[in-house]
Image 1 (cartoon, one colour):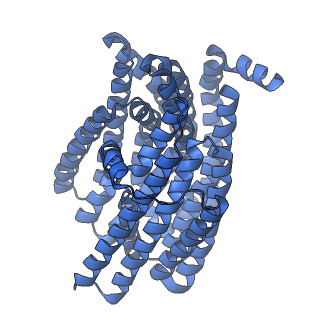
Image 2 (cartoon, helix red, strand yellow):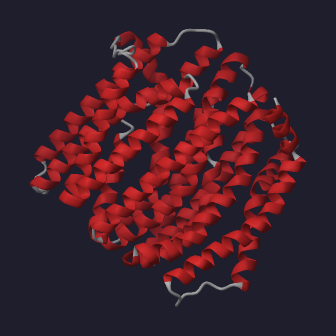
Image 3 (spheres, rainbow, N blue to C red):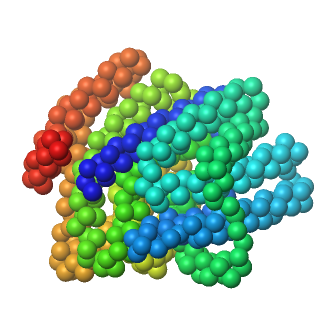
Amino acid sequence: MLRQLLKDSSFFSASRYLILGLGFARNVLIAKFLSPAEYGVWVVITLVLIYGDQVHCGLRHLGDKEIPFRRGRGETAAELANNILGGVMLFSVIAFFLLAISVAVTSGKGEGAKIIFLIAGGVMIADQVNRFYYMIMRAHHEFVLTSKIESSSELLRTLFLTAGVIFFDLPGALSGMAVSALLLAIYLSWRYRMSYRPRLQWQTLKMLLPMSLPLFINGLLFILLTNLDRLAAAVTLSSHELGLYGLAALLVAVPFNAVQAVGFVVYPRLSEQFGRQGDVKELTPFFSKILMMTVYLSPLIVTTVFLAAPAVITGFLPAYSEAIPAVLILLPGAYFFTIVQLPTSFLIATENNRRFIIIEAVVILIAALSYLAGLKIAPTIITVAIVTAASFFLFATLLLLVCYKTAEYPAAALVKSVLKLYAPFFFSIAILMILFKLFPYPLAGAFQQRLIWSLRQWLLFAIGYGILWFWFMQHHGYWARWRMELSN
């Protein structure tokens, strides 16, 4: 299993990096061709598409969980998949018509804005079909195939969106996104030779919805939690400030999206093993090993973005230089956010949805109150960044404590286990503090000088952090295990 997991994670991680790079390039190009105020509008449209992705009412999440679970029990899941596709398409069409009616009766929006929202609705429907097929591939451990198709489709989306924003500004960008999403839906339907056909059996749908709605609430709350900062900024700050913070949030998403690939690969395996064994304790050793590897890898990714961000922004996006302080505040919080994917998968796979919902609700409530109080005192992007970083820390800590509690760890072992997971972060912070003390950032330097400073700091950090990484690999026997795997 370890060899296959490494292979799937490597391919999927590589595709995540490519998709992440393409997404980053798209957003940089959009920021380049649009003013900060227009980019603020793009952030709002992006939020609409993010929330629109939840119109499946949890049916896709149910497929991610139930199809591997049933395979683990030796049952067929083809009929379940067809009913999920039928429900997804039904809810997508209903959501599109509701959006169209809402746009038609809203007199405050101009014709251009109405067209933009209708295009966004078309993207929403096509993406629902595409993500259904991605769900099927993940459920059957076809991660290499998923990686190839997702990478190719993101490249196509980047080309269409870039051409659209260059020639037709914001409407062109959305139109390019819509064309690429439609072409992918046509290809995936042809690729599977229409083996999955939408079915609407009302009795089956009524049986699935009670199982899918808790997962839908999970996903909706998670999206709300991860985008609450931009919602707070959109309500309180100007379009210019929202554009600045949007770029900062984009950079912070880099570490999370890079580590997210591991969670995608591990989740169906957790569901399948739980379906086969039905015992949480049997999953804990496997989950703990993967989680430990993730927390030791995360500081390398977070620090890379942390050191590169100032040089990249001042060199390529000087109009967004005011966003640099927010980026530097957000990135330490990003380390804790990279941890949440695996505990989330563990709780959902072991049917502890209620606990996960409670954690999300508690963090959202505390974060919302903090945004409200903080922005009333100091309505700046720095305030939003501080509250966001603190909420990431709170979310990760509560998730880890509940996961270990679910695995029936003693009370004393709970705190100790969480502190062990945070040790790489504190070690990396100590190294960065020493490096910044020895080699201060060249505030008045040219772009080349700042770039050289970033590269030198990263190399010195890699050497210092490499000592801890080597100890971790040696202590847990990974070097010996990998040598054996390679020899076999």
